[in-house]
Image 1 (cartoon, one colour):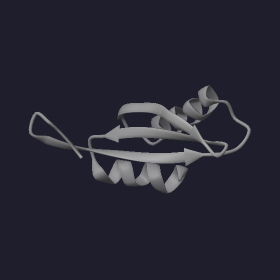
Image 2: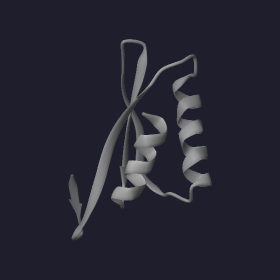
Image 3: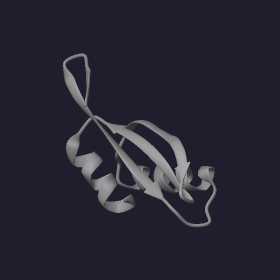
Length: 73
């Protein structure tokens, strides 16, 4: 966890497979986040491992991070 100005942020990591490009995966995640009215502090690719793209996302709220993981992991 990261502390920022007295509030605790939650960072999660998800791995995505399939035939989508990194940009397409990011677009899919951002579209879902917007539809859920969830603001993400950071969403970025970490690396590619075993034909899966690994992403990191940071949220202000635990429940939003948990919903993201439940949907994408």
